[in-house]
Amino acid sequence: MMALSENHALRISPNNPMRLALLLSAMVAGSLGACAVGPNYKRPPPPPASRYTAEALPSQTTASPGPAGAAQTYVFGGDIPAQWWTLFHSDKLDSLVEQALKGSPDVAAAQAALRQAHENVLAQAGALYPSIDARTSAARQKISGAAFGQPGAGSNIYSLFNATANVSYTLDVWGGTRRTVEAQRAQAEYQSYQLEATYLSLSSNVVTTAIQEASLRAQVAATAQIIDADRKQLDTVRRQLALGGVSRLDVLTQETQLAHEMASLPPLTKQLQQTRALLAVLLGQTPDQPPEAQFQLDDLTLPESLPVSVPASLVAQRPDVRAQEALLHRASAEIGIATANMLPQLTITGDYGGTSTTFSDLFKSGSIVWSAGAALTQPIFHGGALLHKKRAAVSAYDQAAAQYRGTVLSAMRNVADALYALNADAETLSQQNLATQAAADTLKVSRSRYSTGSISSLDLLVVERTYQLARIAQLQAQAARYADTAALFQSLGGGWWNRQKQDTTAGR
Image (cartoon, rainbow, N blue to C red; front, top):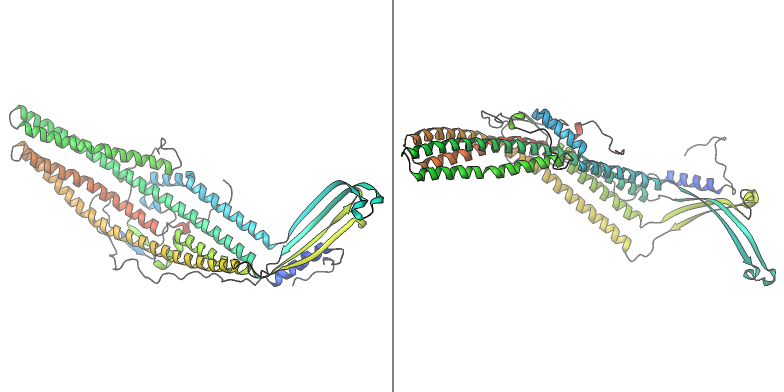
């Protein structure tokens, strides 16, 4: 117990009930500070798995020549940088992500939710201290002696002034208030990880959307090149028709091929325009204000070293897992709250002030009034409500625990999916490069043979169509490797733990 010096000791007397109530509150609260009913929260153990996939993956992906063909090496147990998108070595991409993090309304909403949660913690913590209120009143009254059994006394008119201070404190004997503060802190922790999840989701969406734009822009350019080549081929066929070297059917066949390729261009253009509009919204701007930067696949460099956290570290790094754990913590604290509500509650109160018929005498010794008291409330019968609320809290904890386990499993599956995609899409690109080169060589030879009449226009049409599909598939395979890399970084949590702590509780 805190020792008080003679000069600073609180003087306890019947004339000082406010100090008496405050001191008793502090003494009892201090002696009961370690007592709190309900379970003490313990973090769930990490998953026992040592890897993400059923079979051991190769340490390096397949390499192939050309854009996005570099082999990528897994660094198991490696750490992800906070600004993981910088690994693509694109200044335009870096600038776009930073702009989105500053301008997105989703980030602003998550920051506001976190500030609200912090304020709720502080507000709830106020219940750990006595509440003090002041009240004043003034009234003009007329009373009759008949009200006191003396009708002959006549009536009397007077003024009445009151000024009192009230102290009230419900002792946290069973720790219900502390468990409520604990639950609010867990809620604030949940909001902090929701903010991290918003950062991660937003940055990932910007990166993948920029990759999608680059892929579509390349597909539009490739389709335009194919259309230009087929226009030239159509001119050649028309000249041959004029010279009698081919039939009208050959011209119609080539015109059909050209029209088909031209019809494939508007859908690509539409997707590109929609992607640009999405980027604008991700930056916190209206769709009519897309970013000035326009992305090409050549603007990006494929990261060749890929850090991969072990499963035991993943549960501490994924924001969604940590957010779900915070909800589990809150559910644990709410069991203690429900338990405390079933037990006796002790409240200490005290009033001190003055009452007088003249304002000038309000604080004179003869006008002083005071009271001090305590009240004990023991719930006896509430129709089983309190018991069932406790059982409901236990069931809510079981639900949160199951949801936590499900979130962990989903997180591990996300990493496994990304690893499988990285390996498969690297092999796909390697094979697609070979297919595209073969289709290009075949088209070159076929056009030469067609010009000499060695093959029909239908044969050339098939070859042209094959090359067009191969070229578009090649560009999509290149973009997939960039997108797979971004998906891996996102599935591993995005490296937020390496970012300098930001103050998200202050107003913007």
